[in-house]
Image 1 (spheres, helix red, strand yellow):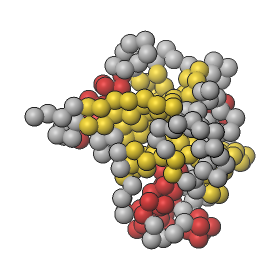
Image 2 (cartoon, rainbow, N blue to C red; image 1 turned 90 degrees about the horizontal axis):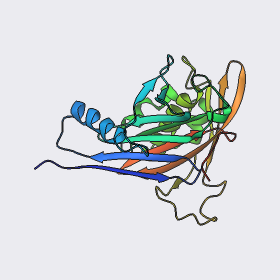
Image 3 (cartoon, helix red, strand yellow; image 1 turned 45 degrees about the horizontal axis):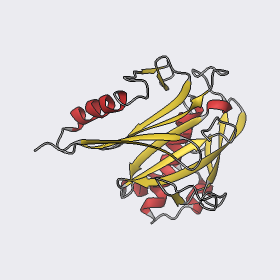
Image 4 (cartoon, one colour; image 1 turned 90 degrees about the vertical axis):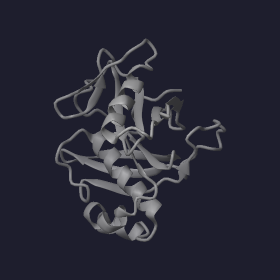
Length: 223
């Protein structure tokens, strides 16, 4: 018996919409990815939606003017969306639309063996070398920041710096104002064309995956 795909959308505490697709475990991975994207495309507010890509690889929704970012790992797909920003060019970096998302299995021990390749000396000191979940969080933060920067060739160790990691927040917030505070978020800096830009990190856990959002403090957000 085939298992069904599960689609759901929710607003995260930072004010960024995330849509997730999971389930369908009996499909091959290649088929799963194709079907998951189809499920996402069929659940647009106004009907079917189509994903395109700029020359730098950044995704966009055809006919839409809001930033999106995509991640998938195993049989889990997540798409993050910002409000419409008609005032900026989505094909290039802008603090107003700077946002990225990344996900990885929370138990992926491989991150412990490769941490020296993507963490700076300061980050290696800050992040416990035996804590799998913390290292996975650091990896997803670096990937999400790279996507948000929209610059090819950034050095993960030197150009993308984590200043502090976030605490894991809820996937579905209850919107208690005490639930979202500076202590729960993390901070990072990305060097883009000789200028450093501050970023905020927010992490939650869903379906056994660590999901991290990286966004500019100046980016558009949902209320």
